[in-house]
Amino acid sequence: MPAQNPRITTVVNREVATWLRRKSKSEGTSVSTLVREILTRQLAEEEERYWAAEGEERLGSFDPETAVSHRDAWR
Image 1 (spheres, rainbow, N blue to C red):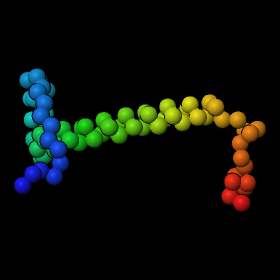
Image 2: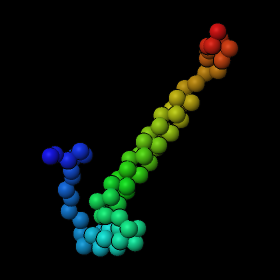
Image 3: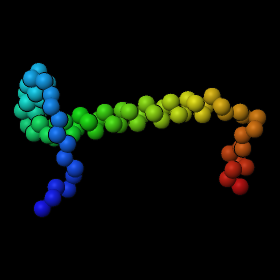
């Protein structure tokens, strides 16, 4: 039966491998789960930075003189 989630294999140096094993043991989880959580957090942080930059760009081009008022938008 195939795995539900895609598998990714990577190679790390001894220092990183030791840190991952020690951290996963202290957290009572597998190295795989720990790496998945780290990658998921990194993705969330990247998305947050992207949307923050998008918001800043849009805010810079906002012109209150030509904007539709809240009342007009919801009429």
